[in-house]
Structure formats: C-alpha cells, structure tokens
Length: 248
Image (cartoon, rainbow, N blue to C red; front, side, top):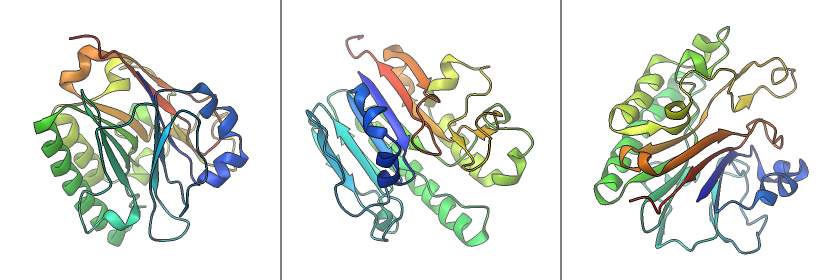
C-alpha cells in the first residue's frame, strides 16, 4: 500500500499548477491533502472514494482524502473547540487508522501559540485513544521542523519555539516513529517546504514540515518513506510511505 500526503496551499492553485498531471497521475492507494482552502468538492478521481473536511472560514485550512479502498469508518472530529477549521480526518482500515492532519501554524504569535499548544495537547490525547484500538499512521503538515537536520540552520531558531518542539517530541516519545528519519537518520537537504517567490528550493533553503508518523507496531510493515521534491505544485512537496500489510 502506498500513501501520499501533500499540503496543496489551496487546491485551486494546485490544480492550476498541474497536480492532476503530477501527483494524481501516480495513482497511489491513498492521497491525503491539507490546506485545501475550499468550501466545495473541486475534483473527483476515477476509482477513488473522496472525503472532504471543509473549514467554516472561507479560503482557509481544510483537508481531503482520496482512497481506492472504502474505509470501515471515517471521523471528521476530534474536539469541538477545534473542529471548525477542518484540520483533521481519520479513516479506519482493517489494520490501522489513518489520520490526515494540518497542524495550526502559530507564527510565533502569543495568541496563536496558545491555540497551537491547546490543539497539540488535544491531538496527543486523541491519538493515544486511537492506539488503544488499532495502530495509527499519521500524515500531514505538522508546521514544525523538529531538529536542525530538518531545517536550513540560518533561520531554524527564528521560526519555531521550544514549546512546539516539545509537543512534537511528546508524540515521538509516546511510541510514534518518524518514518523518514527511521530509514534515513542522517540524510540532509530533505526539505518539504520552501519560501515561494525566492530561489530557496534551488539554494536548498527550506524546512521539513511534513511527516508520516507511525505506531512502533507498524515498523515491521514499513518498506519505504520518501520526499518527492521533484513534484512542484505547491510551496510544499508531496511525501509518501509504502507499507506491506501482508507481513504478520
């Protein structure tokens, strides 16, 4: 099974930039999108079930999932205080839960940082409840470059605060595994976001903000985890994970 994840920074924009002929043409088993910024279905893919979680605020946030296999269940909620922004979707399959998430960006502002910290706490609690029932795969834009190797050093300390790093670390310490770093612990220049309008991508100045986190139990099923920087239809690039669920 292959799963792709991408923050499209507006699905309309990504369509104009060729997502249909880049990511969609690859036809993975599941596609998870974040920051769709729309209030209606913009695209349907042949042979896929599609699910949408729109933000109540126009032109903001939102998530979507396209899946070849119909899920056993789907949940668009995880806490009433946060559900209005459409930041999370959970689909259930036989062997795991898949959580598609767009974590709030605090932008280092005090008001939004409080929102982010509360969101992270509730998200952690939600994931731990899911894991009691089944292992989880979480994908999406976490809006954090967790370590120096995941960031251009010259601006790393300016954009992320210690509290945000600690909250992400809590997920890792709880038994979730960063699939990419598990397989490629020392790989450098593996960013998933670059500043638009500059030559940052060409100059290798970016952040790794997008992750696949998986329950430790699923490490035996993990085949590969990739960053697809060659696909250019957003300020982010897609990431993917390949899993073998025939391994017992």
